[in-house]
Length: 186
Image 1 (cartoon, rainbow, N blue to C red):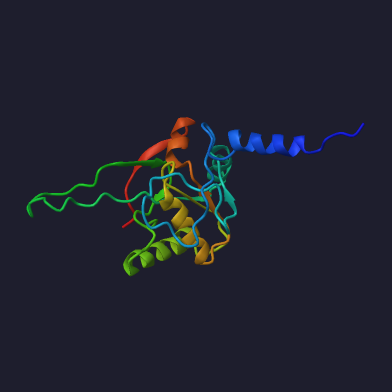
Image 2 (cartoon, helix red, strand yellow):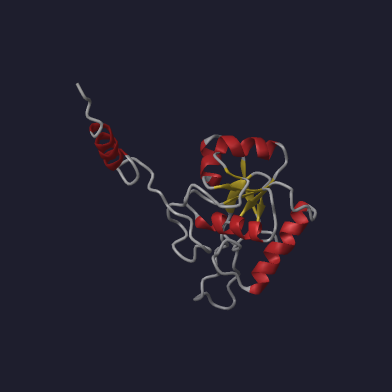
């Protein structure tokens, strides 16, 4: 008696349709863009970053933190509201980050003005002591493309030990690790 071999592929195909990408409770596959993400920065992010040494979970980020890797928070800085009277003193809202992290705001946008790009590059040189192989972990909040953009940009600048921590401060706090109020690097 001959077995039918068609049933297995059909079953696999049906299982993929109901339980694979895009189903309820499953993470939708988000492809990496060719360039930088230019808008809608607080949306689901890809699971990969081409050229990165790794895409980290909190369990993978913690040993790097303990070993002294440079942690760079790229959360954007709140802009001064345009309608404030000229005499109003503007104070940045407080920003909580991973304790010991360096906050380089606004370097995760898809397009950087030359002064911001130069600020990013100069600070990476300072933070790594010019060692482009020093581990650097880029993060922001969960589902924030700014950390993906910044990590991609650092890879493009020749940094070879770039890690991306897409769960960021949210996961760090959820696991009970220390956070602190940080100020942006001038």
